[in-house]
Amino acid sequence: MKNFITIEGCDGVGKTWQTNLLKQYCLKNGYDVVFTREPGGSEIAEKIRNIILDVKNQGMSDLCEAFLYASARIQHLHDIVKPALEQGKVVFCDRFIHSSYAYQGFGRGINLDTVVHLNELAIGEYTPQYVIFLDLSPEEAFKRKGGADKNDRMENVDFSFHQRVYDGYKHFANANPDTFVCIDASGTVEETHNKIVAALKQKGIL
Ligand code: TYD
Image (spheres, helix red, strand yellow):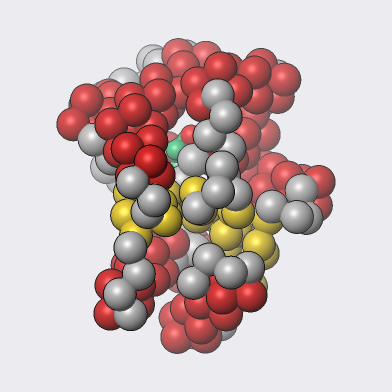
């Protein structure tokens, strides 16, 4: 879908930081943009987010988790993404379907066809035009953020999980070179920001 851009990467790559910097850049330069995030991003979807990430929900099955992410996605698309795109805005979404493919598919080990099919049902024609993938290995990413967040159920899993997530992202990046915009995120915050802006200009988004 034209003007729908998602931002992806492993936990700790500095995605939130970069997304905020990009938002400031867009606002300063007068672009008509909306920044949003998943899971959550709208009132009902945020309630689903709280259930997913709650550390008390250790007993949640992998499939239940995948369906909850997809449910939150449907609601967030309905409430935020679709209306903004219809108004001609550029929408930047912090995480989207490729998070489910990488985390629930590769990370949890749910059959990838199942996760893809579920998400295709959830999003219909709203596939991202470009996926900005912040590329940094989980070793580097966790070093950077100083370990896992104890209050986030998704971060309290063994390290091999995050390695599989990273492998998943690389798989989709290699399989979709026209959609994935891979940004080396190993440099300084400023360097990565400049790379993102340059790539978006090159794609004609900014
Ligand atoms: P969040 O605190 O928003 O992490 P981040 O700042 O890294 O984006 O937590 C979201 C967590 O949910 C994160 O660990 C990735 C995970 N996730 C999935 O497993 N599947 C999904 O479809 C989405 C959107 C997120």
